[in-house]
Amino acid sequence: MTPELTVLAQQVVLGLLLGGLYGLAAAGLSLVFGVLKVLNVAHGELIMLGGYGAYWLFARLGVDPFASLLLVIPGALLAGAVLYLGLFGFVVRAHEHTRVKNSLLVGFGLALSLHALAVRLWTADDRSITTTYGGAVLSVGPIAIPLIRLASLAVALALIGALHLLLARWRWGKAIRATAEDWQAALLTGIDVRRAYLLAFALGTALAGAAGTLVSVGYSISPSIGLEWTLKALIVVVLAGLGSMLGTFAAGLFVGVAEALSAAAFGGPYREVVGLVIFLVVLVLRPQGLFGRGQ
Amino acid sequence: MLEIRGLDVAYGDVPVLSGVGLHVGEGEIVALLGPNGAGKSSLLGCVAGLVRPRAGSIAWEGRDLLTVAPHLMVEHGLAVVPEGRRLFGGMTVEENLELGAFAPRARAARRQSLARVLALFPDLGARRRQVVRGLSGGQQQMVAVGRALMASPRLLMLDEPSLGIAPRLVRAILDALVEINRDGVAILLVEQNVRAALTLAHRAYILEGGRVVGEGAGPALLHDPHVRQAYLGPLAAADRPGDRETAR
Image (cartoon, rainbow over all chains, first blue to last red; front, side, top):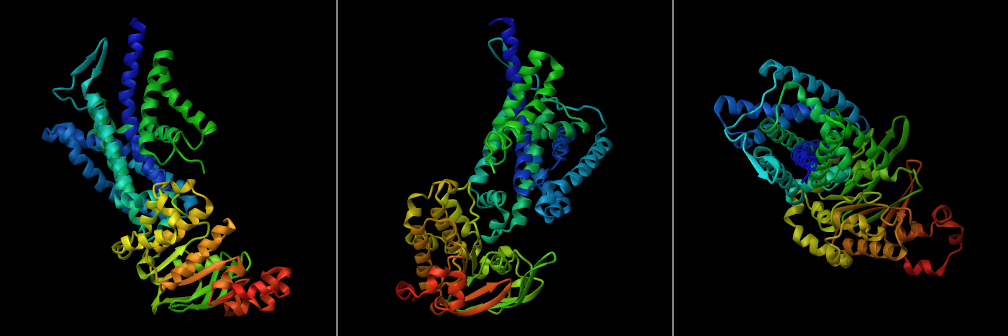
């Protein structure tokens, strides 16, 4: 392999590893948007809080970050339920056409509050979890794969698979999908739509918490990463379209690789640009997304 | 069973229903007829709990339905086949039927209900795993009726089940309604296909401009001059021998 090619392959691998987290982050946002028709712009802040949750568990109690998922996910489920009951439940009561507008207001307010809270609690410094196995690398020929990021990708994939099964098989999972398709018809078949909303929001928050935990291990967190992750998740959701969690994950991988390639081709600063270009191109050419259904 | 009195509905300043009253008795098939915009769908919406009336009462087996949350209607034995079917298009036939039996009471009887639906619409059996969006309009309507039946209702309400469906399948669906009714399920049928509705209804109401302007036994209305003039078209004004054969 020529040195250029090796560098490129290395970039693609790193892009895939990061893309898995994009996919996980986007799945939560997509679930909430698809079911509640509410755009939670504080989704990135929930990811940030999930990261700090894991960081706290590691720094205070020495809990391994992967093991801490077992605490962060239930904690985030609970936090999501509280956020729904205290905030987004009121947004959902408004007429369907005004929900997105109202959710933006509520979401931005929540994002600012959570950001301020995180600065107060953990200062504005970058943090990351450094485990004893943090530097381990799997070498495939000339390409180095950071083991911890590989494990994160595997966890992300497993969580998406679990979510997919939950929505496909569980009684309430089907109710959530039915509510996403037509909430009035769901009411007529006897589904308590408010409860489906609550469950979907809690699940979306749990996914954010899990994504945050993985970000804090393989990368770094600070109180200000929220907006960046919301934006990445939004790009992936637009690319994938609503309705397919596996499709969302695949779109996440795609964005990760596209970013890596553009950084390799045009230089580091262009990494952020490619996502926005994808965003615009998809909106113009295929507004329903790659895996979404047209209206 | 179902007793509606003095129902007033308005969207903003536009009155849709004024002082509408009707009742559906045990095991009856009642048709609700009228031109577009007469308020038929709003009336069903009120019974289903999706539309809030300004005034009036809706009682079901003695209970005030206006205080019941919409998702609990099926628990009380009411099921709706909404206008335009409103199926969960991305899901399979089986999943749609299963969701029809989501409420606890219906869930307990879901196996018998499913057998009943498949006996009524044998076509659906072979298509259980197909995604609903890929089915024809008539097949989708069968799924919609099937989904409502999965709730094992005592009153089935249908909003324009024959709309946009091939005539052969309209027949199949209307026949199914008679069959369903034979098991003791009362039916409230909103239809624009007046002739078909009147041949199978025991009684019918005519709704125009948000008011009940006529009421009577199905076959009798079929021969009512106003009904013939307004709904069956000029061709029907001269009595045709076929009518008597189809009227029950």
